[in-house]
Amino acid sequence: MSLDVGTHLKAVRQMYGLSQRELAKRAGVTNGLISLIEQNRVSPSVGSLKKVLDGIPMGLADFFTLDLGGKPQVFFPREELANIGTASVELRLVGGRLAKRGMSILHERYTPNADTGEEMLTHTGEEGGVIVKGKIELTVGGESRVLNTGDAYYFKSSLPHRFRNVGREDCEIVSASSPPSF
Amino acid sequence: MSLDVGTHLKAVRQMYGLSQRELAKRAGVTNGLISLIEQNRVSPSVGSLKKVLDGIPMGLADFFTLDLGGKPQVFFPREELANIGTASVELRLVGGRLAKRGMSILHERYTPNADTGEEMLTHTGEEGGVIVKGKIELTVGGESRVLNTGDAYYFKSSLPHRFRNVGREDCEIVSASSPPSF
DNA sequence: TCATACTGTCTATTATAATAGACAGATCGC
DNA sequence: GCGATCTGTCTATTATAATAGACAGTATGA
Image (cartoon, rainbow over all chains, first blue to last red; front, side, top):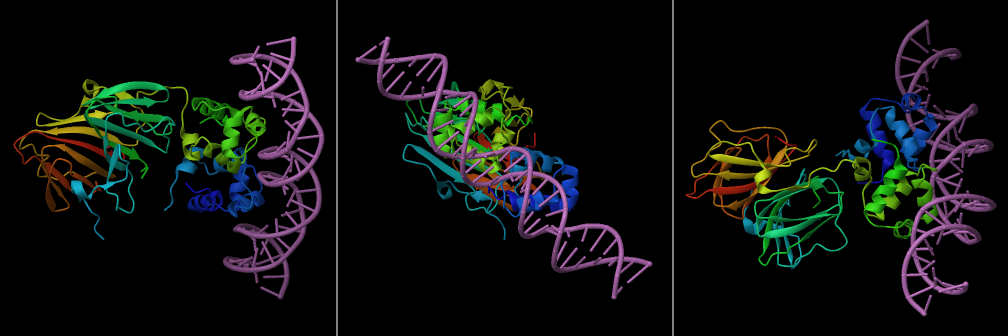
């Protein structure tokens, strides 16, 4: 996510066919402020930004979530799946070369005792998966649970989370996250 | 979405077990500022809020999307996965009860000769998956391919597509589609 | 040509966000 | 009891966001 609030706001405003003054009037701010924001000459307070977006109208979450922006590959043989993991955690990404994806789909393999770490992972969006082989301990937002083969999970990725293979054999998971984290 | 940035930030910070000073240090702001923000005595500039969230770390979109309060289900035991398929094609949906999902994650099982049908499936969005067990013939946009265990696929759901189990054993797939088709 | 109405930008002033550093309460060990 | 080290809050100062209003450019029509 770029912090280019200015051009982002400008794009959104124009998308709605509003002039700076028109939006300013609806939002209860001055047109000058909108000009300054759009030029990135000030970093608006979230209060001000909310007022501005209310005039569109659009929520803060939507504003920050919004992304403005040949024959693609369909089949991905096992050996073509890019490994983006580590020694103990193998992460094989489906569709890595695709320019624009809406999801990351991963085939993950955790060796016994593999651990994504104390410092919890966090990223954008949401993710879920199915345990395909073995067992794994998943901790999400302070709550832990051991998942066995066939079990599944789904959560907001912004919650701190951690995977730890507590079994004696490799654990395999197929997971998906949206928007893509890789 | 409440504009109660203060208590929201406080909740997030505490969820990550950080003190005001610790977070301030990581974020490169003063602890006083975080105190003032959390008391809603100032409306932070989005620049400052971003710096603060970077110290957690968390994106602005996540911050404004995150809904504290309700605790959604995270763990889904195998037997709780709703079966929305047929006799020959078992479709087990992860997170069916979740109010708002961005994806459909499915654990699919195709019996030998199971077929999603001549009349090709089409819907919006995109989907992908990994073959977890067995083999399956996938046809997308006129192109066919037999995928074996470990292989994967990813395509735009608007392309006509069809799955057919051409093996002699059950075929299992873990798939995801976005936006959710179920 | 001139007037009117719109566009976005700029500047001086005012309001507010952010800093640095002091302060008080709580906890831990000595 | 005392010092050290946390916790969060508060205040005076500085930096910056936001305002009001002027300004220039463009377009439309009388």
